[in-house]
Picture 1: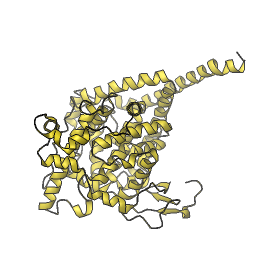
Picture 2 (picture 1 turned 180 degrees about the vertical axis):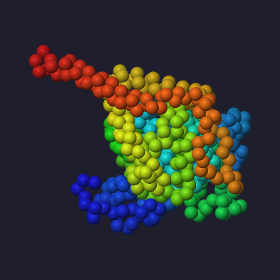
Picture 3 (picture 1 turned 90 degrees about the vertical axis):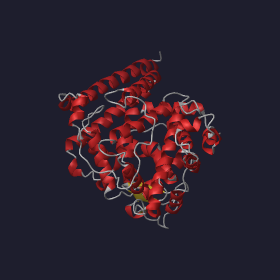
Picture 4 (picture 1 turned 135 degrees about the vertical axis):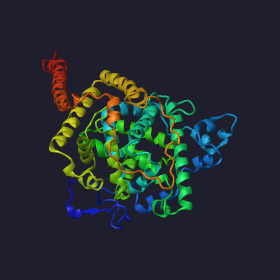
Length: 467
């Protein structure tokens, strides 16, 4: 950071206790990132305690036989008497529904950038959290055959939570219902892995990794959708949210955290959320030498040359390395030799085009409102409803990928020749993609120049001439 020499920076080794020399006022470094340590940052010993606590209300409901949302909501089945249902029906006193609505709009205002960051930094970079990866690998949800559907299901949950202003209101909100489904799914995965580990300790090391899907994991997951994007990915994409947008967007994810059974104290303010993100990044991002590169490879293979983006593996690797930095990327198996210079340049071009597009639209309120409304419809149509590209219909987050002895996610190559035929991808599009990007730059440049010229003519000229 500016004003500090290398000798002023304390390195934090991933997975190791926070050095005693780390205290408020010093600057620390982890994974190519320097940041000042404050009172709001969390030391490793405090983070470690969170690995031994989890969503007790969901576990109690599961133990009582409420394995699905339908059973929980059945008026005659007793599920409404559980602590899980009663707590989920509450609206925290800090909730401002108008702010939640604004936070939902922030997602669509920066939708292209958010989706890019969610894939390349939050998910693929998130595989660097070795202990979380241990759980993910045991579900089988990230094999080459299943990863694409799994990613779309996660996107569906986000779209449901942001689909309309009432999406997170208890009992009727589509996002609220979806979040409760995910919460029960987490409880079932946690119960299954814990049961298997007790009968065979070699299956999953609880002493090392803690309770599966614990409070530390949940906090890290919410952070990966919020402050990790706004304060790590976006600056690397040359994007910066306005202060009010940050507060609104974080308020949205604080409410989702509440309904999914995650501690909400880390998200009280924007500064505390960022401090927790940096603390978790420094301590928890410690890639598993085998599983982390394996899951990254599987996701890239599952997505390459497929709709809606039709991106090549090299282009995906280039964006992963850009958004996560060289040190972490190397340990994820995304080494520089996998990426050609052309794809590095193309990534830079994409980020510039996206920035111009977003900044231009957000500067004109009427354009901004129209863009938000259009993207709400398009993303839902493409990701959820489209039979060829998307899921075809909303998923119910059923317990499909059941952990079991001998079942681990394996590395694979895309076996998608038949799938690609079904998709009917136009091969002629691939060589034209780069040209399309260049034309996008030209068009955006012309539009931006026209807009600036209009502003100057209608506002500045009259002022100068005192008209």
